[in-house]
Length: 206
Image 1: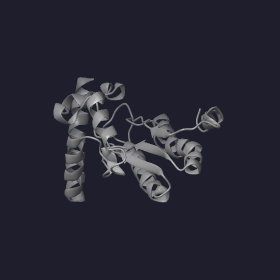
Image 2: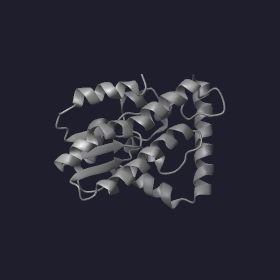
Image 3: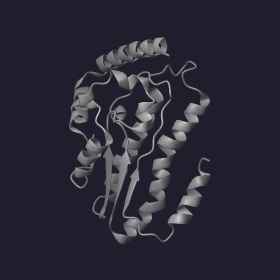
Image 4: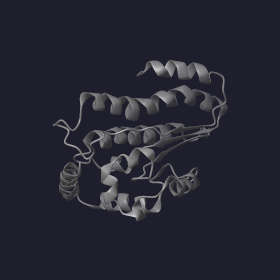
């Protein structure tokens, strides 16, 4: 339904005292990791990811933020991804969409500083959800970096009000720190190799 749905949402929320907005929607290509230049990613995938992962966050924020600023209180929590820490070969579209969420959140957090409105970005790694259950690649992820939603949410909620930027979970924080400390050329090479091998295995299993 694209942008038309937001007019309806805005109408339904008119005059309501919205204290917290959690922008927690996201989709990815069902074949992730995938080769963007091949049939792994369709044009339908492109627009679905852009509309949901990218456009949704500023659209929903625009609906509720003016009221929060007027009241001088509120919190906006945007769920990005650890994939936004660095561009990821073979996860190109998804990681780019989450980088948008990261930049938007950081800029908006500074704009709202001192207004009583908190804007926080959470950048999780892989969490056990209905969406990740459909990913064949998750069977290769160790349990210690693949928490269930209860464990992840408990840790992430505890961070609200203490930081503008977090991965939300201790092991995801370690992964993000390791990624940032790795030279980009080496990280690119390793991620492309790992994702290519993973893709080959997944194709053989399907």
